[in-house]
Amino acid sequence: MSDFKLGIVRLGRVAGKTKYTLIDEQDIPLVENYAFEARMEVDADGNGAKIFAYAFDIGKGRWAGRPLHELLWEKHRGGIAPSFQVIHINSVTVDNRLDNLRLVPVGWSPKPEDVSSKQREQSLYWLAIQQVPADPVEEQYLELSRTRYYNANGELVEEEECSCTYYECHYPPCSLIERRLREFNICGRCQVARYCGSQCQQRDWPAHKKQCRERKRVLALESEPER
Image (cartoon, rainbow, N blue to C red; front, side):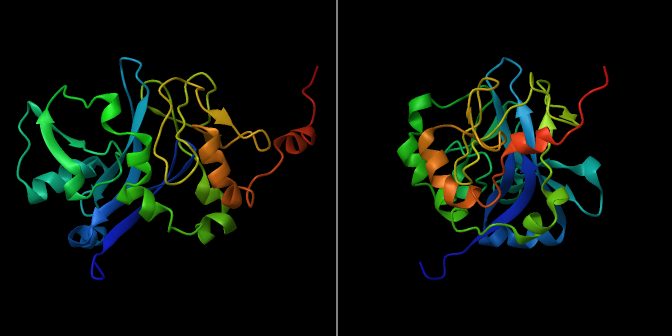
């Protein structure tokens, strides 16, 4: 196991936090020819949203972007028939290790109990992301940590829209995302970070407290609207 290596690629911020994707050592060279980012896909039937890693061929531009899990499957396993799709076995949609990918018929979905919270916390993705230090570039240049927001149609919007923005749990290793708008609890101090439960909020506090700021104090400095 001493020679066991994985790649952790930064995807940028989406759904309220910085996202990363996990890839096998053999796929690390992809970073030389591809750019990566996180994209949110909203379920048209109202079942929340999911975040995926997208890869863009640097030589072709953004129009050539595609889901990273499909790119990796075709690279190592072959083509994907029209009636099939590639899914993530552990339900962590940015864990793109080949062992975590499976080809299934379109429309197939695992039972909710197939992946328990305990299994998720013991997953390789969870353990790997806990080792990622705070991004020093983000801390110094706040404009680079700007969060991307998506509306109910999965379209990128300029600012947060209270009625149609989904969030992922702010605790880095946790990949749970809201199934309903405004489902997660919000940090009472900064009014920005959102958590799927109190356990993740408590685990994230040692890191979050360094950036957490009282939002009300900032709003109090804003000028009153003209009457």
